Image (cartoon, rainbow, N blue to C red; front, side, top):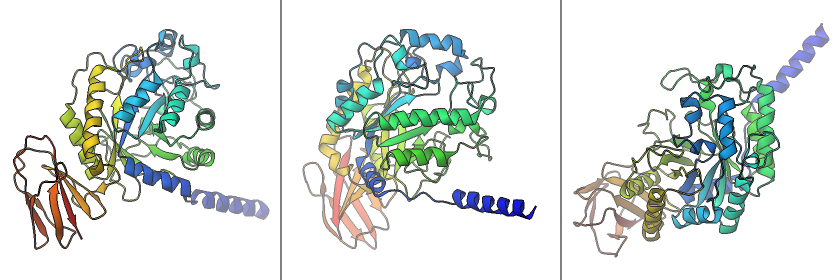
Length: 441
């Protein structure tokens, strides 16, 4: 009895020690975090068989389509107009530094040649590995690649669907087995991290399926996801690979960046992001060009180029990246409305990129009139409203202003620093966005 008690105590100590082990990022990972912080702009791509009905990526859940019927979409997913070179070039010309590609969404379809699911791109009429084509082109063009991977699954029997908030109409009758599902995810993640070259990040989504609805106090998960095992595997296979999880909570140990869905950090206007912005991890906000993530044939609520530029600037003002989404059409082409807006943003960044890339969030959080970004001894004041009038910057961090001028054209600006407050009176301008540079010490 004493021997058994001693053994149990030793086991408890070992488990406790393991549970208390804290993640220490590698030097390569820290380097990529800095790159990510400087990058500021990326492309999100929601695409797969869910694009065929033209009703967004949640169509299986929203229309209560069974696994049996939804599987038929694979039989006519044949994106003959897909061109990886054009997609990556479009992102690069838009000023985007990385791409986050859907590899497996909640519907369970894998966009690569996987050995662990028959519901994959190789069994469609297309029969080509989408992930490989995008990865090869990203490596060729110098655009970093992040991979979106769904934690939840509306298809598999072993996913703990009994406790899930979604996917309850897919016709599954089996019993969830998380140990089996966890091994499946590990196997697929191993494929993604060993077959496609350097992967800069894994973008997880779906944790919220096992929590109480947003707005309720209890946000604990109904299952133990074993993130220590999942994250440990990723960092072992590719130490530099950054991990983010769209759980809408304070970052967990092992995560390398924090994301906000349809929200700028700390604003929570969408009602999804209750978490406070981390002051230790890089930040990212993801948003759509219209109102949908996946292709939606009836959604014509496109944000204007001006609105998208403002969002990028405000995100940068918070020190966050903007991951801007497109939902390509099922044939592999991208809507012209998306292309036009991305081209506009690329042109704007050709002029103003220095005020966005490699900057940090302003000492002053974004205001109604605009936002501030900063680099060494330079402050970029982005005036996003034509009728902003006099701008006041309180608690100014510089003791003096050596020079104040317009970023475009270098014309002098009237900026007065008195008692720690700067007062700026911009000239009348026809420009949608005016950037004023303050150099000081």
